[in-house]
Image 1 (cartoon, rainbow, N blue to C red):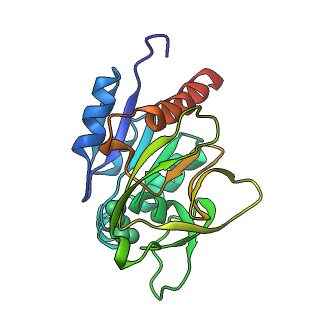
Image 2: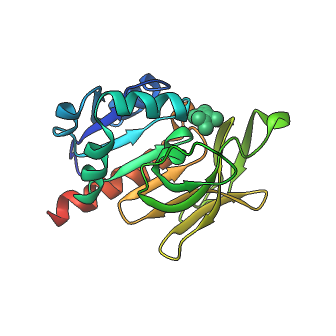
Image 3: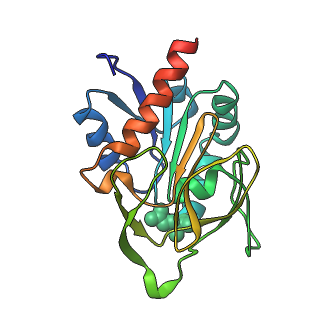
Length: 199
Ligand code: GLN
């Protein structure tokens, strides 16, 4: 990281934000809790956390953040969607009458895809580019039902895609902020670094 310090926005509508903030601080970066579109302008990157995707969507609308986040993505600023954040970043959702999507990543998502029997669980994942298995915490997690040709699949669990990257967008169906393992956040920060160097 060469001591670079990034201002990483965490969308703070509803859901798990504080764990993301402390993980960022531990790695020497500055979290910004984003509550409106003005605050987004100060961020180098954005994390859309887990929570209830429908509730987050409603609050994003109310705070005029939908177009602002779409614009942020067009500027190629990195965005990391975790769990509900994965649902929101996608282009579509299967088996739902009321999809909530920013329409940014070329994925079709199955919300609550792992079903009720498995509301929350942990699994060691083989992740592309990581030497050791990654301990992932899933909570009422979605999965990616299908992904476009430009999407790089990073991990699957029981044959379902649970982590992927497309250009400046990264998604994980699990909660990287709930483990001490920083490797997913570090992967995201390396995308921020690439972007900052490219500018
Ligand atoms: N099931 C939630 C949703 O789709 C996501 C759960 C989570 O973020 N932990 O909104």
